[in-house]
Length: 329
Image (cartoon, rainbow, N blue to C red; front, side, top):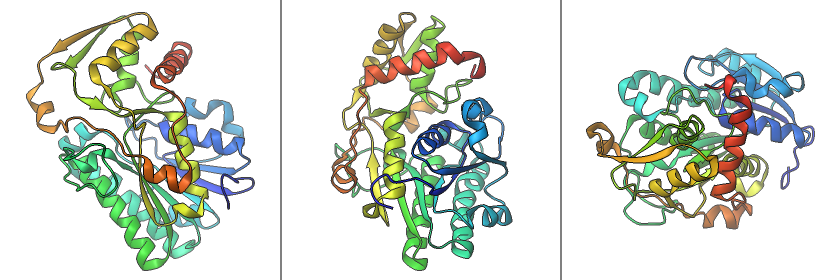
């Protein structure tokens, strides 16, 4: 496979009914891939049948758990590329139930890799890491060599998953790539609570003409990037030889403060208001401070750069949920 040639490529997406997985499935179908998805539809983890409603007849869909080794061996056996996305993705919930987080994010990722070792060593496996692996940045922007000091269980298990992929690449010759994502946002993310994506939650509050609360003065920086750009990074990681065995930081590379993000959302949506409140003690202990992604490595290796600016991404996100809110609220 060279560049983004996916025609007739057999792809498996774990967590395929979720935010990133369902958007990725759509892009892959447009490129001519043969797409299968597996999702356990565990409550509150983001899986949503509506995410694939309009493309369901074009997919092979399996309701199943990535922790099931026998199932995963069957599913990976004839695949060329696996996007290993199934996980628990709420860093707050990871602190409340760390054993479940380990089971989903650690055992789940390991089971996919072991299935590939046993049944399909020639597949490319792409795994999403997180900017939270770094903890509080010691320097900005954050490059791939920045020290890692996770501050919550979710970040520890993202780092664990990354290390699994490096070991399976080095020890067993499996082609892997890890994308350490900053803060993706956009359509098809769950919107019932705020833990999975604060920016999308701000969009919901604005659409409902409610108050958006920003902690402190809102000067903490974040690196939000639109789901379309995240999908493009995954497509490149899954198909380009230069991604083999690599780890890349992925984000906008252009930070925005929380206060500015909230104000932009209110302005774009045309409703809602922004209010500042003191930091809750539990949140302040896990706050990593400002974050900016150094995207020079992935730009040089894979030719990837984000294309959708923040304001346009917010506009497209708001338009999607205005139309389909009954499937997400």
